[in-house]
Length: 140
Image 1 (cartoon, rainbow, N blue to C red):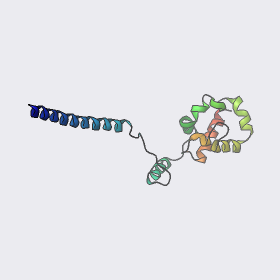
Image 2: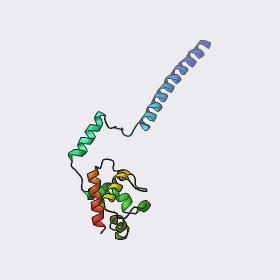
Image 3: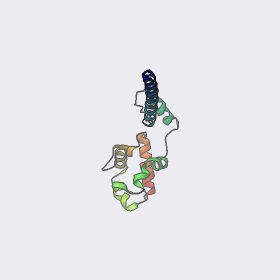
Image 4: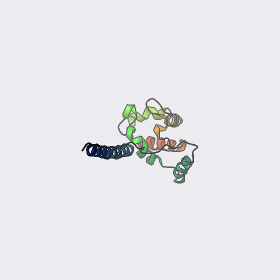
């Protein structure tokens, strides 16, 4: 009788350990799935960066309106942190009076709360000039 109890206990223990290992593995897989990266970082100079750059370059330069709608509207439509609103003649007049070269330089290098290129890091200097031209023309 003692031997049967020992065998049953040993069997139950083996089944419990096997089940525990399976549960642990499943939990680890679920955690790995929930915490996996959602994307990848591709740095300039890496093979993946040339693919991204060539894809953007192949489409040609974007118009000022395209860039405005994609990158600038979030601040310039609402006047965030003092950004001059598109079409607001009063807020653009003193800026335009400083000259287009100053506006171009500010759009490329940043000014006050506006970071360089308004965080449009894939915008060329020429595209930034185009978006300035677009915004100035819409605000005269």
